[in-house]
Image: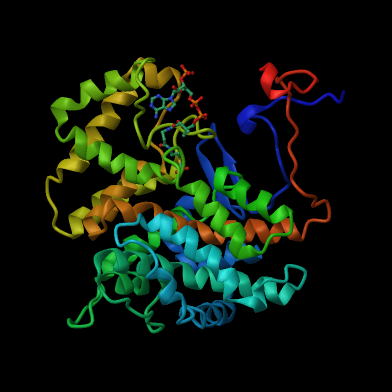
Amino acid sequence: GDVFTFDPGFTSTASCESAITYIDGDKGELLYRGYPIEELAEKSHYLEVCYLLLYGELPTRTQMEDFERRVTRHTMLHEQIHYFFRGFRRDSHPMATMVGVVGAMSAFYHDSLDINDPWQREVAALRMIAKLPTIAAMAYKYSLGQPFVYPRNDLDYAANFLHMCFSVPAEKYEVDPILAHAMDLIFTLHADHEQNASTSTVRLAGSSGANPFACVAAGIACLWGPAHGGANQACLEMLRQIGSVDRIPEYIARAKDKNDPFRLMGFGHRVYKNFDPRAKVMKQAADDVLGLLGIKDNPTLQVAKELERIALEDPYFVEKKLYPNVDFYSGIILEAMGFPTSMFTPIFALSRTVGWISQWKEMLGDENQKIGRPRQLYVGKPRRAYVEVENR
Ligand code: CMC
């Protein structure tokens, strides 16, 4: 038969050409369209980064204003989608709700389903960037039993998300600029990460010609797993479970034990073998935000820092090149902002949507684009004759 390269987990196979994001795992370098993540985190903001990822260049002032107008035009959801939410149990995980609702967008926005029409592709991208925060916030409100809060287009992207999550109609709510800034930073740090599992899922789904909402729903489903985006929720729950600095050695020992499935959540990365540049920015941000909010001696942050310190000196983690990743410190900030752990992965999903959609768009524009169709090494039974039931 045919001869194939066997590469389980795709550790050495490039599945596509891409001009969007660059990672150098040894140097701990991450570039969006050539710009270092540290600089974007400091000087840019999420919607500008969205523009950069989607169109390849930083926008001029006019281009930015135009883009902002085009995005905010789409922040509302079709009113009927509200009824769709009501079909879910209140205690559904918001990721479960999001997979369903984002997939269902293909039943509402019929004028952005034709993937061969560039205008429809563009509108699909704008709709997704604009509506994902609304959907995530609605999933949260629904879980609380509170009324949905409509978007406010006079607020910027991150502030509007906080407004939809935390304001209630009976009370005046003003978005704290410290929180809005931290939220924007978290969105920016998660915006894209080249061919990770969920992005590869979006590309694979898109390679068959599936509509963009279906593709992003597939990406959300993949992101949910604890080895991927689900790690931010799992990490904070782990830090809470550890609870105090004196219990860290017990958990380090468990993480090293081959017979124990436990892993340090928020640690390790397929590509980064030196450090994750996003984690560095996130750690600093956690310190800054907690400081600005006047939260002193946060026990979770203390456990996290001490866990990092001990792990980085331990030969097991040193030899395996395991470092804190983006999910290690993000949860501490989100917790301080008032989010429950179940909202951590939905926030990752809404931030990554621009990356998914930029990669999807790039793929459709690639003249070498074909359906993704991995082969396999068959290890099952050879051909054999059917056995009648009475002879089995
Ligand atoms: N704790 C303890 N041991 C670990 C960990 C960890 N977090 N991560 C990897 N190892 C060990 C693993 O047991 C293996 O040991 P051995 O070679 O003796 O079998 C070795 O390190 C290599 O691990 P691997 O699973 O083969 O590496 P991978 O590249 O397939 O997996 C990973 C990468 C991120 C899935 C993994 O490090 C992990 O499960 N980490 C915890 C979950 C997590 O934080 N995920 C978030 C990833 S970053 C962004 C995101 O997607 O959200």
